[in-house]
Image (cartoon, rainbow, N blue to C red):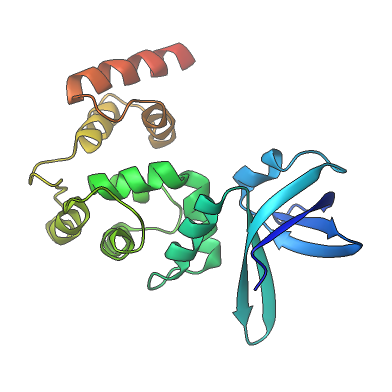
Amino acid sequence: MIGSLRGTVVHRSARGEVLLEVGGVGYRVTVPPSAMARLGELGATAVVHTHLNVREDSLTLYGFVTRDERDCFEALIGAHGVGPALALAILSVHPPAQLRLALSDGDLDALMLVPGVGRKTAARLLIELKSRLDLPDDDAAAQAAAAAADGTHANGNGSVSTRAEVRAALGALGYEPDEVHHALRELPADSGVEALLRSALRLLGARR
């Protein structure tokens, strides 16, 4: 099993693939879009943490800038119905820390920002990934998944999660999902609804 590679970036493709030359051997490595810029320019030395995906008709090497990204990727592809392409899409929208926060909060709406992830898939991910990733010790994900059937959204106290409330309030004010998503990424994790909403409105107002 190839756990990591250190070599020279000699090519990039529009398909999200880099060619990393290690000791005279070129490895084709598929990386998430967010990793492209972080790997440096052509000719730069780069380190990627890798996962080898084995299928009957192909061997595909996936590379990540951090071990945490690779661990999240492996947890995602271990979930029912999640293949490498969807796992990369999830990590492109939600970096590991943000993904854990969404799972801990039971935030279905955050997971549904990923193209191809509907309410049922998001609810299933909340259940499956809670046991695969290192999350705070609460039952938010399980409660949210159970509530998904009737369209409710619960946190560990049985109420709508703080970030889901902020997301809903911003949506009602006419902000687009992408705007809301980027604003929430910059907010602190330990504030109340009113404080988070004020901060989000300041951020969104500065961008318009």
